[in-house]
Amino acid sequence: MFTTGSRITQAVEMVPDDLDLMSHRVFLPSAKGHDAQWVNITTEMVVTLANLPPRNGRVFGYASHHSVYKHWQTVCKEAGIKYIAPHAAGHHGFGTETVVRQGINVVDAAEARRWSSSRVLLDSYAHSEDGSRKVLDAFSRDNAIKSAKAKQQQRRILHN
Image (cartoon, rainbow, N blue to C red; front, top):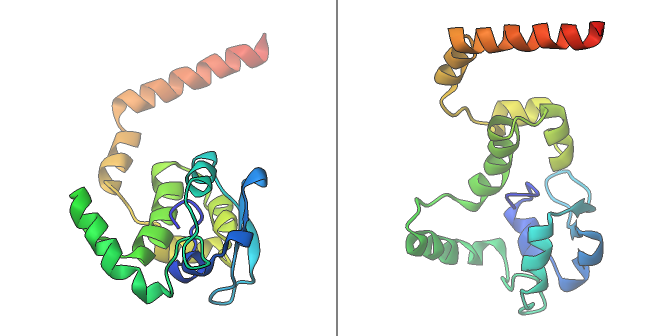
């Protein structure tokens, strides 16, 4: 859910035939106005899914999204991390990781997640982390000097 931005219901409903690991993709069922579709996945996810035996005819073995929550809470507790609901971990995690932490263009991130517009991503799913510090750092004297030096070097390269 984190790397695809999928909904918990989509992940839970996946069956083994929804995996095309050779092509690094999974078929996500339709959800909330989105058609079912193939979605690219990371090499790490390919390896994880390849080593995960199907249960109860499904990739993850859960009967419904309701049956995930208790196990999800237990895993968070055992890992010593604060509980974050699946929706927050998936949608909000994807939005914040791509746009805020990784600096990916918001249009590209929204398209990768299949949101109807980048506005949806910005308004609901990308959350600031240390925003005021980052803004102040961007305008700090050291960054201004580095930026000016980089521009001078670029001009020299273009004129040579």
